[in-house]
Image (cartoon, rainbow, N blue to C red; front, side, top):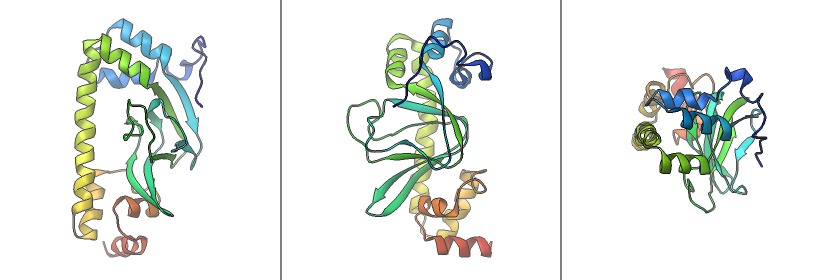
Length: 204
């Protein structure tokens, strides 16, 4: 379980004394001082080693996470098979989507594919900001637009009939991941066999 001492003044020293989430939000809309204060008070940094789970189905997840450093994937299990549903890197906000902001179980796993540094964002903080600050709703809407487009792109990728075209689309849509993510996870994300992906890469 993630815990934090809210009186710890050293929490943000390595981040110029404020939560990196503030800078991310400001890219979408200016923030007032009260929003910044609450973000600094109620978010906190966490780190996970490569291959560790941030969240698994046994957890009752109460957080979103901003990736400050590293790569994380989301996946579900189909029997003994793991199906990678998304891969995210620095400056993206991630979480278990199937039970986002609602009480309920999720089949999703979140796994660090590199050593990762994250900012934990409690769901209760998100809800409070939405309910009390119009600026937060503007930021939330603009961020959701980005993530909806990303989700649409993932859905489109899975429907391209040619495995080679699927891989080429991945290189364009998700630049920078090919050298950071193992081929088995990329193959799973693209719904193709690892052997097929290796042949495609050798070909092109």
